[in-house]
Each structure stands twice: as structure tokens, then as C-alpha cells.
Image (cartoon, rainbow, N blue to C red; front, side):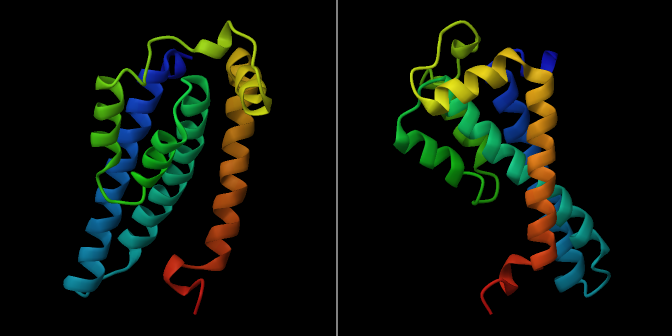
Length: 155
């Protein structure tokens, strides 16, 4: 599992994927609303972005727990997914500030609290953890999809 070999690598890939899917969604919105054409690209870009957004959230929490981020940094990492194109600058900043190491701390150290114990278990058994994470993200994604676009959730 080369993708998750280091926190730095995994976080970089997800930050970039989040940025790419923002582009797809915004391009789809441009086609739908500005060019007044099909909404197919919004459905495709929105679906990809929604799934990637949720995956980024899961990875941000995993990396934050493993790398022992401060609560403020976790909040900034999560918030960076809400603002278009902010995940990559946040990832660069986190790497520069030493928040993204080249090894998973909890693969070798015991967890001290419940979140660290869960993260340690996931990191020591990455394939089952990845499958479970993908299933959970897919279920949450499906529920959110059934609720309709976020703009309609509270109306």
C-alpha cells in the first residue's frame, strides 16, 4: 500500500484530489449556469467532489491524530476542504511546519487515548481499515446524496 506509506504522501494525494474535484465541480457549474447547458457535469463533478471531500475529512482526522496536531490545526485542515483550492496550500503549510512526517507514529507506538487507539489499529491493519473507511464514506455519501444538494438541506 504505497499510497499510505507515509502521512505526508497520503495527505498530499488527498489534498490534490480535493483540488481536482473542486475544479470538476466548478467547471460543471460553469457549463450549467453560465453556458446554460447540461447539468451532467455538475452531477459527475459534484459526486466525485463529494466522495473525495468525505475521504479528505477522514484522512485529515487520521493524520491529525497520528501526527499529534493541535485542535486548531485539525480545524484548519478540515476547514481547508470547504474553501475551493485551499487543501493544497494547507498541505504545503503543514509540511513546512513539520506537521506531516515521513512515518506513521502510531504504527509503532501505543495509543494513549481512544482516538489514538483507533488510529493505531487502522494503521497496523491498513487494508481492512481502508475497506471499512471506504464503506463508511460510501454510506455517508449515499445518505447525503439522498438528501439532495446542500443548498436544499435547510429549505
